[in-house]
Structure formats: structure tokens, C-alpha cells
Image (cartoon, rainbow, N blue to C red; front, side):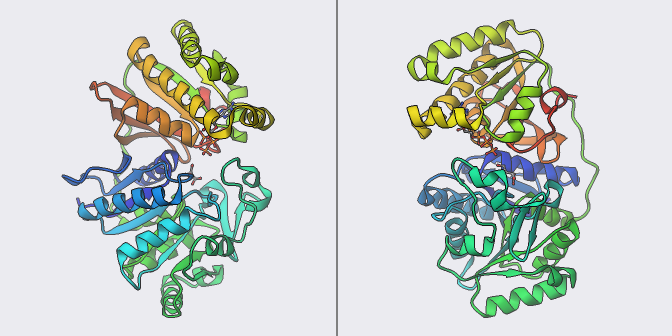
Length: 415
Ligand SMILES: Nc1ncnc2c1ncn2[C@@H]1O[C@H](COP(=O)(O)OP(=O)(O)OP(=O)(O)O)[C@@H](O)[C@H]1O
Ligand SMILES: O=C(O)[C@@H](O)C(=O)CO
């Protein structure tokens, strides 16, 4: 089976979100970590390249995304998809606009980028170009206070227009409701007017299906969006078989949380097993001693140990003000990554659940995972995945976006 959809995702948990949605439809998907080496094409119909490009400097994000897109094309990908966050996480500098522009350059002079972050299953909907998170405008949700990409404007036409010199326009819901032909017609009109970025309204999966059907007739479009539109495209591939559910490998379990999101804070508080906080200030002075102390806890814990740096926003802000935002983040990510490696090597851990996108990227890289295949859906947008580390150990890895999973996720994810 040939590669139908080649996805470039701007973070690892976002890549796993797409893989989970595609797998749930019975379409085989594979996640590649980092810019892949070209070479033999994977067998999966959907391949998702997981980058760490959401908050990287725009030039770096463009370089890695274009390199990944070239490899996906060399593997015969029929469509290219740029996966960004369902809450459009970005700044005026990028990286959604610059990366989409670079993919348009690759696709040809008249190409256009068409898509939507709307993902109704995750309560992200678009109306009149405005993004809603649940019942709130994006700008009135907790994303307005995101430490790296605060989203203070819910008008995504305006947000994207600040990131690209190319004209941006939206397609309203009534055209989506009029069906694929109406959507395709409107896209063609906008392109004829010189528009190069089109954002679609969508409030339910049927709207995304109409968009996917419209896109089918225009193979030169670059498709963009979050997991919702990617799933609609996968649905349109058809021929889905029931997803297989493999048993997990034997071995001990570990939970690592470096996420600061509201949902993860609730999950950490609700967890009923043994847990150990990371002392971030101690980490600044003596990271090796902190990791050694954590490993004594992991080695002795009865049940599934949780190692957590998750803290209230005021505490994170205090630590960032004292030690620097990037330095604190790097220290925490490095410590959790070292704990993951030591737990696998010394404690027989084979199942690792990680909370937080940046944290997940750091842990996956340290474990030497390069390819992930979905084993089982753990929650909407979250999957258990199988990877083989460089020593040949089979690992069961779950990378959870900060905002995903129920409050009791850390207790229930293992079933
Ligand atoms: N106590 C802390 N103090 C300062 N920084 C922290 C602390 N705990 C975690 N961090 C850092 O905050 C960042 C959290 O980002 P991460 O992407 O992992 O989670 P998130 O933002 O909640 O989730 P997502 O991107 O999945 O929505 C990481 O870089 C992590 O190292
Ligand atoms: O789209 C989302 O909300 C997630 O897949 C995500 O990008 C997590 O960082």
C-alpha cells in the first residue's frame, strides 16, 4: 500500500494525536521522530514526521519542515499535511505562516495552503474565522496565558496574516454546509484572487469531511490543520480495517510529568500511586544528585511511580524569573529524560507515560526512539505506541499532550 498522506507535525504529542485519530479509523500510521533519512519508503498509508518546531526559531522550523516534506515526497506521499496545534499555538514570528509558506514554495507558484485547526472531538471549533476552545473564544481560554505562545487573538485570519506576506482568507460555515463542490468552488475563486492561505470554518466532523472531499479534487493544495482535518482526510482514504490492539510488553511502568497545563495539574493531583516531585532549584545546583535521588524513589516504589516537575503557574513563573525560562525548561527536560533512560536500563521499566509536548520530545530522544507505531488508543488524541530502542528493547510509550486525557488518566491509562 502506498503512502497516501505525509504529515509534518510541529511537536511529538501532536504527531501522536494524528496517529491516534488515524489508527482509530483502522488506517495504518507510523510516527517518525525528527527529520527522517530518505531510503526505503515505510509501508504505512499515513506517515507523520514529529518535529520539535513549534517554538523553535522560524528559520530552523522552516529548514526541518522542508527537509521532512522532501523525504515524504521522495517516499511517494500523495498529499502533504502540515500539523499544527488545535489551538493554533504560534507567535507573530511564526511558525505556522513561515512553514506553510516554505511548503508552498516547494509545491509550486500557484499552490495554496488550505485547512483548519478545528477538531470538534477535542472541542475546538471555528466560526467566522474565530477559534473556540469549548465555549470560550481562544483568546479567553487558558491558552491566552500560555508561557511560550500566548494566544490573545481568536481571529485566526488576522493571526495568520501577521505571520505571512501572502494573502489569507476564510471560508464560512454556510459554504461548508453547502457541500464539497461549494467548498472546492470557493477555494478556486480565492486562489484566482491571489489568496494563498485559506482557513476553513468547521464545527462538526461533517464539515471536515466536506473539506476533505473538496481537497481531493485539487492535488496541488498543501493541507494544514490539527488532528480533526487529518482524520477527515484519513477517513476519505476508505477501506479501513478494524484497528488491531496488541498486548503491552512485560515490564515495569513509569510516569513522567513535565507539563504545566491545567489538565495535567489535575491529573498529578488526582494520581493515587506513589509520586515524587522534582526540586527544580536543587536541579540548578546539582542535577546529578537530584536524578540519583529520584532513581532511589523509582527503584523502591510500590506501584507505578510518578516523577513530576508539574507546578502551579505562579511557582513556574517564580522559578523562571529566578533561573531563566529556557534554562529551567532545559534542566527539567534533561532530568526527566535521564530518569527515563536510567529506569529502562536499571529498573526494567518498559512502559513509560509522559505528560507534556516538550517533555515528550526530550524523553523520546533520550530513549533513542526513532519510529513509533500505535498499539492502542489511551484517550481521545492519546495513544500507546511501540518503539524499539537502540539496544533492541521493545518499549511501550505514551506521549500525552498537556491538555488531553481525563483527570484520572494516570491511573486508568494502563488497562
Ligand atoms: N516546575 C517547573 N518550572 C519551570 N519549568 C518547568 C517546570 N516544570 C516543567 N517545566 C518546563 O515547562 C515546559 C512544559 O512544556 P510541555 O510542552 O512539556 O508541557 P505543556 O506545555 O503543559 O504541554 P503541551 O505542549 O503538551 O500542551 C517544559 O519545557 C518543562 O521542562
Ligand atoms: O492539536 C493539539 O491540540 C495537539 O495535538 C497538540 O498539538 C499537542 O501539542
